[in-house]
Amino acid sequence: MKLHLGAGTKKLEGWVNIDSVKATGADLIHDITKPLPYEDQSVEEILAEDLLEHFDKYMRYVVFYEWVRVLKIGGRVTLQVPNFKKILTRYFKFGYDNFVDFIFGENMWESNIYIGHFGNHKWGYSEKTLPEFVKQFGIEPMIIETRGLNIRLVGEKKSHITQEQMDDIMIYAHANKTGRGKAEVSLGFTREKIKEFQSQEGQ
Image 1 (cartoon, rainbow, N blue to C red):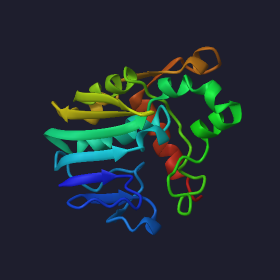
Image 2 (cartoon, rainbow, N blue to C red):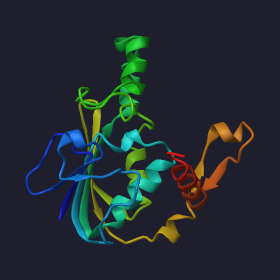
Image 3 (cartoon, rainbow, N blue to C red):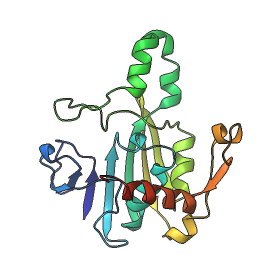
Image 4 (cartoon, rainbow, N blue to C red):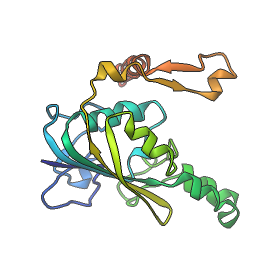
């Protein structure tokens, strides 16, 4: 089984194309922020292009864990995200307004389907930070390359890490350090807070 996450209308043969919007005509309509409906280590390969950057610094841990959870040992994950470090060098070329819109504005390639809700970028990656992030989940990067303004990473799952093991990861926030919150919070604490907010949706 191969999962194409955040597929939009780009349906790939031989893959389960997954998206949260019915209008895309995806094979499976599913909210990526919720657990994937697959057993542990039941998937051979995962493809997520232009998707991971749409989750904030906390939610990305919860989301990416689910992708890795269902991946078999030896399975591959392919990610494509904007190269935020490279994009920063284009500031003067874009001009302020276009630069801000490029980073935080509507970033979906089919605006006739997606408006506002999913489009903004919520986290940035570089050729250094993306491999560092995936290694925490037992993924060994094999290929890391820059394509235009994007980073493409192909990794292989080397070990199956449980949620309990992941919960001890500490996530640092500079704004909290200089403000009133804790400078670091555990992933376990983060997961519980996300569940709390998700349970309030629609109330």
